[in-house]
Image (cartoon, rainbow, N blue to C red; front, side, top):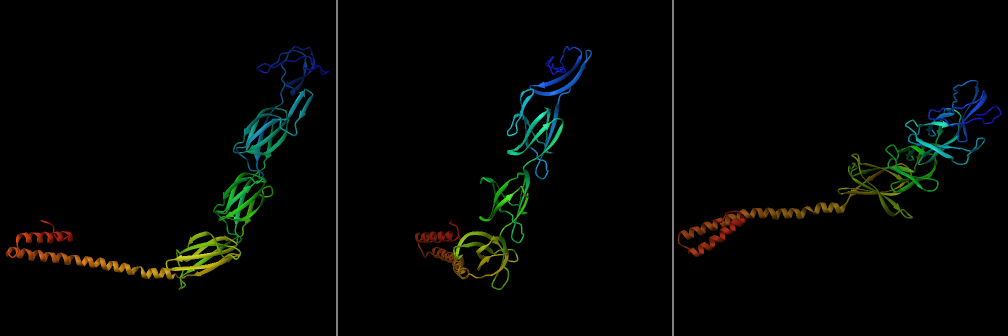
Length: 398
């Protein structure tokens, strides 16, 4: 309690209900409510009789909304609140401008990108928005209930790849590096040739595009200037139609595409594609500029062409007969026919042998019944004939 001269005439600490009982002579006073050295409420009162005076403190609510560079809400971002006022006495305080003061607390944004801090004293505060790393901040002088929107250094990334003719490139590997050369992420373009990232940190990135093991583009992507990028890569469509010697398309022919390397483009490099032709004999591949060997094979037909790819191209490959395959096709059946002949001959010979031994056994029985052969010899020959018949499957032993 201060009198009109500014002299403290009374003071006290509120109880649990916020009341302070003081005895004062009649007069006009200034009531100051302090929290530490911070003045959080003030009112002039005129004391003429016992009375209850209400002093409303300067306590406010702060609502923070976090948005990206396009104004879209940022959910699940942490907002830190710092008190930037340092009080040395009631009349002596410092505002921290080049650092963070005492932390008051933190909250996480909801699906609408909003969060609130309630019951704050009047003063200067620093708000910091963090999502792995700081993405936004703001200073505020809180003198009443306040709503504040913080635009954060985040954006929606749309990165699209197309060929030289505007055809989308799907399945390409894309590498994003920060300014220090650290790999931020690697991803592959979808069926629309796109990579999309929501709430992506807006920065300058070095981007490499790799297609079938070959780097086809590298450059700078600055998300501060644009959040949607369409990159034209030097890739071209090669369409090859495979025909037989009579000019008819060959379906399901295996086509192998290899890159030719070396000074004169004669050394065969790695195989880039293995594809089969469609029902019209076509195969289509997407390749960077260069020299390529294209081979096709189907049964007795083979073909090869060399292509210098500088733009979208259509090529026709007329296959010829592979003499080695033709020779094998003609010669291989000969031993097979001979083998079949031998096997069939054996099949025909077997019934004749069975018939032969049956006739010999019948004659032996007649000789023995007429007494023309001794029993000992008869028994020996009969056992031999019956054993042979059993082996041939013509008769069982008795």
